[in-house]
Length: 462
Ligand code: EPZ
Image (cartoon, rainbow, N blue to C red; front, side, top):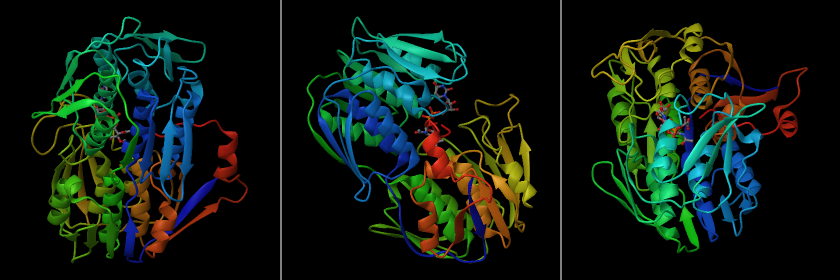
C-alpha cells in the first residue's frame, strides 16, 4: 500500500501551475462522442479520472492519442463499437451516466450503463438526469441484473427538444441534458440549469463542434439540435479546485505561492473568503499569488452553494484551514447532505469541530429538518497532531494533506489513490514548493501501482 508521509513546519514557497480542470476534461471527452469529428484538447491533466474516462471512451469505439507530457488528447469516434458500458466502470463516479446523453442520438442500440447498488429509479441520485432525458423522448428503464442493476436507454423514435426545469441546478443533469439536446430535433430549453465554469466550458466546446447553444439570463440554457459537426480544437479551463487547494496550502503553511493559471473569474467567492480570513493574495495577469499576511482570523460564515456561490469542493480544505484561524466559524453545506464525515479524523488530530443537523447561519436549505449533519462550527486555532489516517474521498484527501502540512508532527496518509484521481502530480508539485511530503510503500504491502494493474478500474468518488 502506497502512503504519503507528511510533516509540517515548512512554509510553501514558489510557483505551481494549476492543471486543466478534472470536471471539465472528463465531460469534454464524453461530449466528443456526439459526433464522428476529431477533437483536440489542450491542457489535459494527467490524472486518474481522465485515465478512466479515456478507457471508457475507447471501450465504445473512440480512437485516442494522449500526449501526457504535452497535456494534449486527440479523440475521434468515427463509429460506435458498442453502447454497453462494462460493469468495471460502474461505481459512484458520475461519468458513465453521461454516456446516455452523449449516445442517445448516435445509436439505435440500447445504451446500457450499470450502476452498483441496484436501487430503482427515483431513489437514485441520478433522478434529475433520467427525468430530463425522458422529457426529450428517451426511454430509460432500470433493470436488476445478476450482480447489479443497470440503466437501459434508447430513443428509437428520436429525440425531440423540450422545455425542462431541473428541480436543482445539478451539474451532471445539466450536462447530460445538454448532450442529448445537441442531436435532438428542435429546441431544448433547460431552466434552473447549472452554470458552473465547467458547464460553460462544455457549452463553448459544443458551439465549436456545431451546436447552436446559448446561455440565457436566469440559469436558462437553450440548445437547437443539429447533425452538422466540425473538427474542434479546445483549451480546457484551469482547475479552480486545485488552484484553491494550493492557495490554502500556501496560506496555511505561512508561505507564499504563485498559482499560475488560477482564473480570477472562477474564484471570486473563494477570494472573498480568503480576504475575510486574513489571507493575502495578489491577482496577476497569468495567475494569483497567495501569501500568509499575519495570523488568520475566524469568525466566518460560509455557505456552500452552486456557482457562483462558494463551491462545495472547496469546503473540506477550507475547514482544515479554519482550524488554524482564531475564533469560531460556521460552515453550512447545502449541496451535499453528508460531506462532513472527514471532520472526525481532523477532530482526532486535535481540531475543535462540532457537527449540527440544523442549517446554521442563515437561510434554510433543502436538508432542513432532516437527519443530516450538514453544518459545523470550527473553533481555532488548535495544534494538529500527527496521526495515521485513511482518505475517504478526493477533497477530504487534500484536506488531510493540508492538515499534515500545517501540523508539527508526522502524519501517515493512506488511500492516496483518491487524490491521484483528481490532482495532477500532487506529490511533485508540493515537493517543488518545499513541502515535506514523500510517498512510500508500507513495509510488507504491495505498491498501489502494482496492485492497480491487477485491479479493474474503479471510479473515484463522485
Ligand atoms: C459535480 O458532481 C462534480 N463532479 C462534483 O465534484 C461537484 O461537487 C458537484 O458537481 C457540485 O459542483 C463532477 O463534475 C464529476 P450535482 P455532480 O449533480 O454533477 C443531487 C469533485 O470532488 N442530485 O450538481 O454529480 C446530488 O445528490 C466532485 O471533483 C440529485 O439529487 O453534482 C447532490 O446533492 C465531488 N439527483 C446535488 O444534487 C440528481 O439526479 C448536486 O449534484 C442529480 C443530483
